[in-house]
Length: 171
Image (cartoon, rainbow, N blue to C red; front, side, top):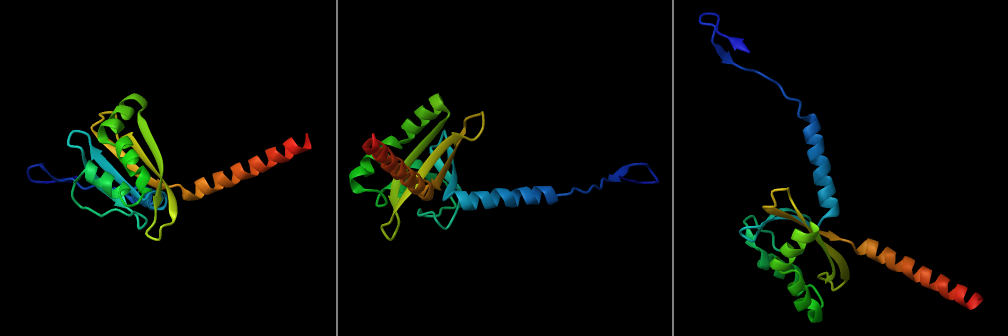
């Protein structure tokens, strides 16, 4: 504090804050987010709009710096990127009303699906919807690429099936 010697008024308050920890934490969160998520977005519950918070190079939707209608984002995620025979089913299951209803009862929604890359390679993706905070005015929406985990799970399942067949033949 700086005090005026003539009238004893406090004229300035000086303080220092060590932001090193906050900067490190920010970098950790950013790194985890970029490595683990295709994108992170917030859905305004009242307006049914989506604000994109973070998007990696893996994201295959149009980057928007403005809020966008939920259905617009949903169509960008599904139409032309999933098996055409399954497109309508995905759109129906991911309708805003369905997501909100499941959030109200379960607190989270996890929706795995197969998407296709620009090179037509199948990719396993997972959408997750959770409440951002107890006020329940925003929904945190994330998409993760779970292709590697899915492929490993399939390999383990194949090994288990082979082992079971061998045991069956042995008996």
